[in-house]
Length: 332
Ligand code: COA
Image 1: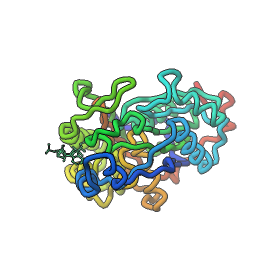
Image 2 (image 1 turned 90 degrees about the horizontal axis):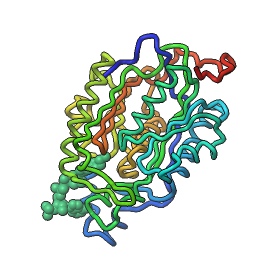
Image 3 (image 1 turned 30 degrees about the vertical axis):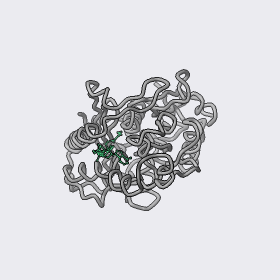
Image 4 (image 1 turned 90 degrees about the vertical axis):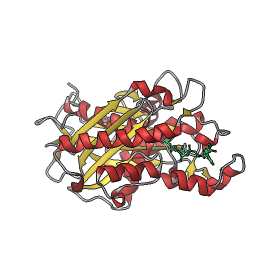
């Protein structure tokens, strides 16, 4: 898969934010209705508690407001909204339509559904929009998996939850942060993890686990190779937050020490599209990244999909493109 094309207009992340519902459901809470235990859930998944509640639009609006405020970008300047979700509030229209209106944006808005790989898909699409003329793009990853989880099924109920993360991406006069990216999908694995319309998540956990490690490593290695960097060069890996054992196995095979992984799943559970931005925002809030550091984002999900990206954090060389330069708003 490609490294960023030489000469393509680059972009940098200038603001970020996250949102979690107020309601916390602990493992102990789940033992009241399920035949499970805090020890089993923690040992097998790494999850201690999760946040549950809200709609996909509500959580998206909250995380996006934080990202916009941090970037200092006025909603009227946003040229496109890309919302990654696998749990839209309605079949039609896209949840991004509601979010766009609530945020006061006047731009194209659409949803991306690539399950738990979705945020990296959306971020890649946003870089593509910037390469062809958009100047400021809002990228949100949100899921409310609690709405499609069968709370009587211990195989899935202990894993899934709700959350949102957002970033503002701005065009720069220079190469930008994205060095390389990879998007994969293997639709022959569709039945390993799915939810029919109006139904609940069905999952063959063991097989999903086995493939998850394989496809994360495969995608991560493709991006590292395309970027021309080694695993040793990576300062922070931001993996999809599904199971700490998957993260450990993938990091080991990628040759990246687990200490370099950003993890939030102990307090978020698996929030699908939100998991990578939640972990990235948590790492940033904890001062884990310096300008020039290399970051590997890597996810997998239903489909089965996989996606990864190598970013060079910060970009002191690049100058944000002045919004007054193009009357057309940067659109081609
Ligand atoms: N509490 C207690 N016991 C449970 C349980 C729970 N919540 N869920 C399953 N078990 C039982 C099983 O019934 C099984 O019992 P058995 O041996 O009597 O049949 C036993 O625990 C072991 O189950 P198993 O499926 O082998 O456990 P595991 O180590 O594979 O862990 C998962 C199960 C689901 C945590 C793990 O397979 C996983 O994380 N898979 C990937 C899921 C995922 O990432 N999905 C999202 C993708 S985006």
